[in-house]
Image (cartoon, rainbow, N blue to C red):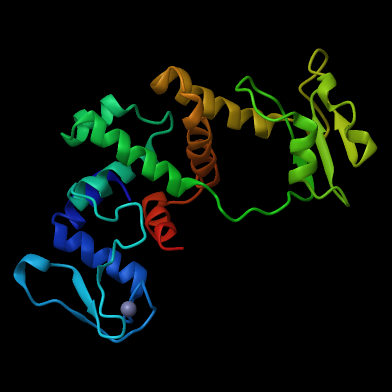
Length: 246
Ligand SMILES: [Zn+2]
């Protein structure tokens, strides 16, 4: 969904809440604290979107447990921030987004961190099949340990460049090497896919952020991974909103 669609489809706090309630609960609202469906909307006009749970006597809204919980920023601005970030190939600086949304930069930084946290893939599976590995200068764990921790070696083929750090790979799995001083691909052996991902990450680095603080590096990588994995999704905004409740 592009920005114009988000802006016109969700013009108010109420319309944003209604959309989130539909995505989260469909026709069966449930209490996020005790999972009971013995719930009812509060009637007070100043409590739009709030519900009472008759089972555990708590009060809640659809944002409970999400990145937007207890936010004071209007939900339309959250929706626009998500739409802008999801569509920005080179990522967005907090200065830029603060200007776009007319929100203080500090607040936008907080929103962006939360959006990036939601982009972290929590479903961790070992990689299988044909796998490309490559290294880029960001620092991190020793590479062999990283490969052992994340790859199912049985039946898999790891494709890398000739960097000597991969020297021990052949001891535990099939390993194909492409020597970049002579060619960038030999038949189906290449590292073009992973290098495409690095270029996405580096474009965000050079184009928008200029430097990452160490504690945030994984969040910037998570954002780049999320965008890479969603690149064929026609509605990354919708995918993100659904992911908030996954
Ligand atoms: Zn409850």
